[in-house]
Length: 166
Image (cartoon, rainbow, N blue to C red; front, side, top):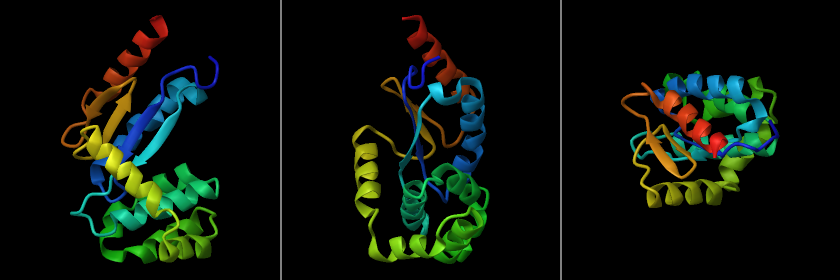
């Protein structure tokens, strides 16, 4: 397959959400099956109920700017329970462990350089009906996760199959 030959998969995520941690298994499986032909884009939808989700989204954007976005996101989601108690200190610690310039991540949290990206994602998510996380959007179809991931990966594969056949 040619890189980018499949529809883009948007993964609407909140980095303090335990369900998003579980959803990573689907993302990994889809990447294993389709490789680079399936572009996966992280979209931020921090929820008000999670105190550190907005800062986590900003830190993730800095990680993407430094070229290590997905490894950072995966490492952070693996410690989602800890984020609730440790907050920004954990964001910087995970950055250091992931090989990022942790001081730059800390500075990005202070200067807010990625605020517009997070705000734009959140506004777009609301506009298209995202109300919780995880949510997937592929080929114009929104698939809501949250309470149950059951069957979502199969539905994504089905949508991809229909797109490839047409």
